[in-house]
Each structure stands twice: as structure tokens, then as C-alpha cells.
Length: 166
Ligand SMILES: Cc1cc2nc3c(=O)[nH]c(=O)nc-3n(C[C@H](O)[C@H](O)[C@H](O)COP(=O)(O)O)c2cc1C
Image 1 (cartoon, protein in one colour):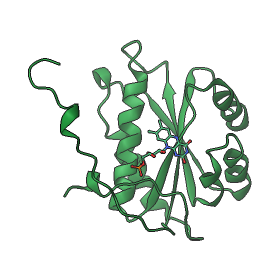
Image 2: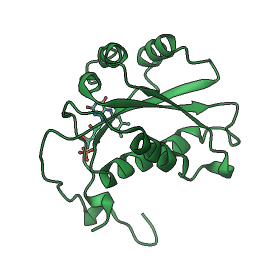
Image 3: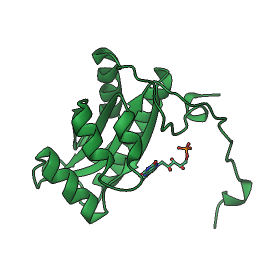
Image 4: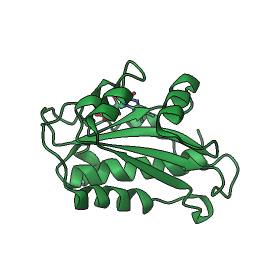
């Protein structure tokens, strides 16, 4: 099975730092994603200080995994770089999934924390990280060495598949 079938959200991490070259591999994977007109309208903020991770973990009630992650990768959509109106979310979705798959490949655990389009979450993150108005903080990806085990459940559901017409 491919990496896709091994990936799952991991929310508990060992107290061990991920080396810089591995973080760079995650960023390379993110930037390798497809995007409308190949605009590559993304920016990234890598956060590793305990103080910042704690602050971000308190920004909403499902953001707690951020506190103990080795690093946070904040993925931003740069509206000035986007070439096709309304497609930036799809571009960033592909970018995020690439990072999660690369994290699986590197033996890391990761979880995608949703921020955009929930306004209060977006505003908190923008203010805390000095993000300019032309960038949308799309999500926070927590990464670290996994400290929990769980089985991946396969989700293939034939009833969702339609041939030729709905
Ligand atoms: C757009 C989006 C937002 C998410 N937000 C959160 C979040 O805020 N906190 C969290 O713990 N998990 C979050 N997740 C992870 C989902 O809960 C997880 O992907 C889902 O339960 C399926 O589990 P799996 O990733 O292990 O396959 C988010 C995932 C997506 C795609």
C-alpha cells in the first residue's frame, strides 16, 4: 500500500526535536504540490519555540496538540501570488496533504489544525505571527516523533462511487 494508506493524524509527540533537514523535506514536499496555473501561492512559517507553540495551542479548543509538537508549520495562502480567483484553498489543501504524506514517509506524526475560514482563529494567528493582510493563515500542521499507536482504518466505500452519471 502507498503512503496514503499509512497516514493518520497523530496528536501526541515525544520530547525530541526534528532536525532542520527533515523540516526542509516537509517544506519541499509542500512546495511540490499542484496549484492552479502553477501559481504556487504559498508561504510557510516554521515555529519551534515552546512559548509560541503554547500560545498557538490555546487559540482554539482543538489546537492543543500544538503545545507538545516539535515544530509547527503554518501554511499561508498568498493572495498576491494566486492566479485564479477562488482556487487558493484548493492549492493550499494539496500543499497541506503533501506535507502530511512526507511526514509519514519521514517516520513522523502530524496533524492538520484547521484555522481558515474561521474568523476568530485566523485573526488570532495573524496578530500573533505578524501575518500581512495579503496572506491567509490556512492551517497549522503539528509535527513531531509519534508517541501514540493506532491502526489506520481503510475507508473505501463503494456506495460513494458513481459511474458515468450520479
Ligand atoms: C480541514 C481540517 C481541519 C482539521 N482540524 C483539526 C483540528 O483543529 N484539530 C485536530 O486535532 N484535528 C484536526 N483535523 C484532523 C482531523 O480530525 C482528521 O484528519 C480526521 O479525524 C481523520 O483522521 P485521520 O487524519 O487520522 O485519518 C483537521 C483536518 C482537516 C482536513
